[in-house]
Amino acid sequence: MITLQTVYILAGLMFCTYAFFNLRDKSNARRYVNALFWGVYGITFLFGGELPHFVTGCMAILLAVIAGIGKLGKGKSDSEQPELVEKREAGAKRFGNKLFVPALLIPIVTLIGTLTLKYTPLVEAKNVTLISLVIGTLVAFIVALVMLRDSPVKAIKAGGQTMDTVGWAAILPQMLAALGALFALAGVGGVVSELVKNIIPLGSPLAIVVAYTFGMALFTMIMGNGFAAFPVMTAGIGLPLIVNQLGGNPAIMGAIGMLSGFCGTLMTPMAANFNIVPAALLELQDKNGVIKVQWKTGVLLLLVNTAFMYLFVFRF
Image (tube, rainbow, N blue to C red; front, side, top):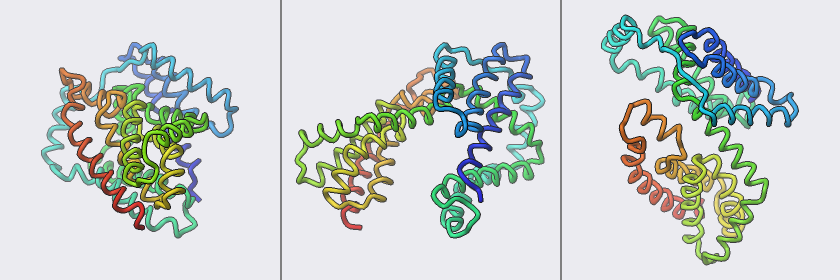
């Protein structure tokens, strides 16, 4: 059976491979720091379940220290070599829109796996979606290698170079999600619930829904991640008020609630890996340029999600 631990092992091996490639990259003046960063991160995936919590916590602090002092660097990418640039451009012209096939395979395989694999003994049922996503990624990887007739080593090395470009922001979602869980355990959700009860009319389903969806977006803007906001807002408003008090559907509440949080992601510089990193990769003069373009879409989607939540959460 494929379990969540299998996914963690694959992720750990991938990050440790990035560390290995960094060690060998003499064009990167900070290759040892990069190797330490990705190596420690990989070890948390490989052995996090066996290591004492204190040790894992110290490793997380080490990652934060390395990121905080700005010591991560980036070597010379293979794609910067003139002959490889020409080869890449020629390949892009030859394959055209077929280059999107591997990318499209990821959501397609994920959806198929989510709908079918839960009825088989092949995967852990409670994590079928995440496992299907990993399977979809591996399928897309193999298809891309066959289609482009390239080396898996070169592909993984290029992935490591991309991660070096993104840097510490690549692990920010996981760290913020963990922080959200800690906030929930610390009782922040209860504090939010009491504030909401003192401000909004509890007899109004619309007011409660608005408090939840807009609260998800606002807390996501503060935390920089919808996964960090979800446990706090759901423990404070979603479960006690929408589900328990008003009898709302928890599945609909959770799905639309997360979408509402993602609307906040579009509107905050705290979501660095979504908004600040793309601006850096695209070499935009305005580091907030991405946010300025998409915040109106975020507001519109938030209003639509709020309307959907109110229309459907109490009727199904």
